[in-house]
Figure 1 (cartoon, rainbow, N blue to C red):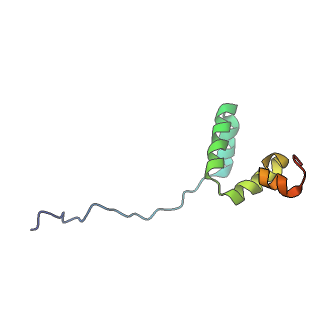
Figure 2 (cartoon, one colour):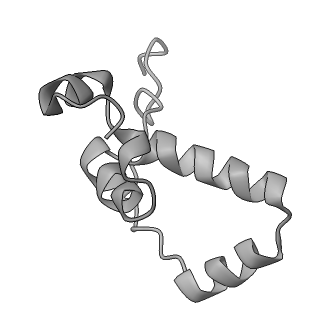
Length: 81
């Protein structure tokens, strides 16, 4: 028996991951019970995790002009609008 290599291999295990299922209604209910500070932390994490296109789609519903980049302001020819 060759003692340099374990008979079990290199120790790398690849397991199939099942998609994580989250009950959105329970998540919403739990978030409603959190204090403002925790809600802002959750939102901050979500902002970091969302791809730019999805983040923009959500944010434009609630924050229109505040989200425009300086480049977008320059392209419109009107600062702040």
